[in-house]
Image (cartoon, rainbow, N blue to C red):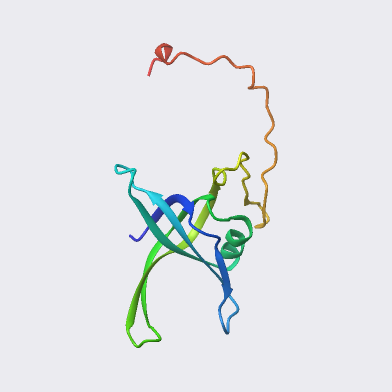
Length: 143
């Protein structure tokens, strides 16, 4: 199984290009991820998103914003202009979530996929009368 889940911050604004011939949107970005047990070490993971997913990432995310990415590792190679063979490793984005707020931003703008497959800000959630509830002491729970 080839499955990757990443949570980190964008190192720069995503770059959007369109594939020659097909016209498919191709978004490239890098996510900086702090290592779990060595907080002073960071990994920089290259990601690529296609189509509407790539266009949405480019439209709503900028350098410093936090993102959660689900995808798979893809390796490849190409011949550089100097004639050498270069190898690449990217995460092909299958889905993502906007999380947190931007670096230094006070707000938490969040965008999600609507039922009609468009993107937008989530609707206000109703209070449903649960705002006045008293918390339960976990010591009183029988399980």
